[in-house]
Length: 515
Ligand code: HEM
Image (cartoon, rainbow, N blue to C red; front, side, top):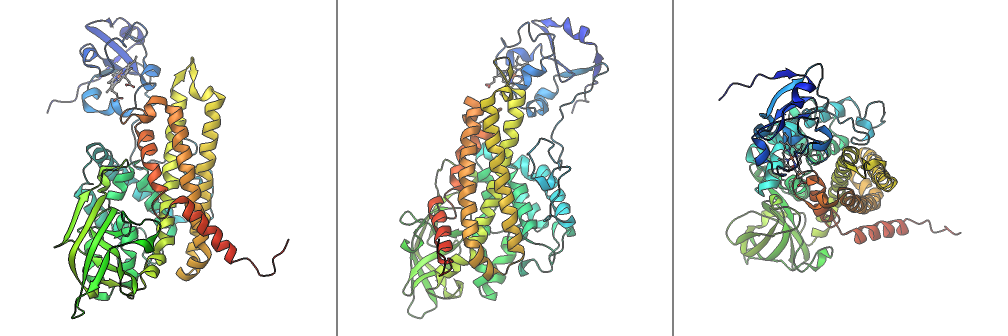
């Protein structure tokens, strides 16, 4: 390995004389780069280094066309030969764990000078630790895997397991008992839904939608039926492996035949004559991750059965517009023999098994949608400040500001409603949540994913062609615009959820209510 180059100090006049072919320097944020040889290798072409740039300060030109991250890549960082005397760079690399200072880039509870009635010291400790962990380990893997389409690296899954993050993603409950959470900074007893919200939102900051699902997010919807309805033997078999990141689990409900209409599914489970096994036949579609908490049609109606990978179970990749790293699959069950002990809940009562978790899973989706919108707000605020059009920054155009205003209002309203619902969840039993919050959560989910799609569309307008380009300035916008529609489908399509909320409200109308 060669020794790091010693950086020299130059005046702006020193730099100005290196302004021709074969001897070409530029200044970016008070750093001096020798691009004499790089010029002809530059992905944006050689002609851009004209007299406006050669030997000059190219900071504005550079940041109008590249993300800062470009200059941190080793092959480009080594082009730096010095700095400008008496000046300091003001643009810096991502600092792992740092809270953004861009207005609205963080929820108010995390922004300097604001207050919150909900978030206590243990939440703040957890947020700092999870952000640092995500920045150090998850963020780089997320970017690399979204680029190569492979599943999340097992090393990241293992690190998450060491800190018990997989267990914490299931929310508060007895499954946390005795576990050391995030190295011991939160006790299982104090862990509440706000802690869970923090974990979900910190992971979402990676801006890698499919990757987040690939990190065994399927457990959030697939594991609760095992936790709440599985026999102690089934739990002992499954939970340790999932929490340690050795096994993945998911919910297998939707089929080519049935989506929101859960009762229309066609996968069947028939008992063997000795009553010891289920024989499962059928297919599932759009399923993410490994072991399957599967909705089946049985003699008595609808039953949920835990099916492990094995003989008769096959999966093949479904190519979606969202992301290959999530591992979305088409699953076929061909005479799969499953011990009846794997039945989750009572036979024929599968709908209750499923319904019992709908609120929590939709709430997790809201946490995720709220945070991903904020990431887009931050990208847009930065871009409209640094990008010039018609000789002025984009944010000097009223039409652009009006789009930003709408985006910010959406992100803030979703987060604030979410925090209120989370507070209610912390103070209600699971049963109370089912009767009081199903409508609220359904409305928030619908509202949030609609906001997300409007924000995605506005962001593409603001970024122009870059908003549909998978690398460079608009890469997170392109990803968001491509993946946001998925959030509007999972956990119940928007219209179905909104209707559920209204029907619940209608049922709660007092008999004597009159205008
Ligand atoms: C050390 C200095 C520079 C480095 C290392 C560099 C590197 C790159 C890289 C890697 C790309 C590919 C796209 C991306 O990854 O964002 C690119 C594109 C480009 N660069 Fe540079 N660049 C430098 C300076 C400049 C300057 C000063 C200008 C303008 C005066 C410029 C104009 C462009 C243009 C027009 C593109 C194409 C952008 C697009 O496709 O949207 N570059 N550059």
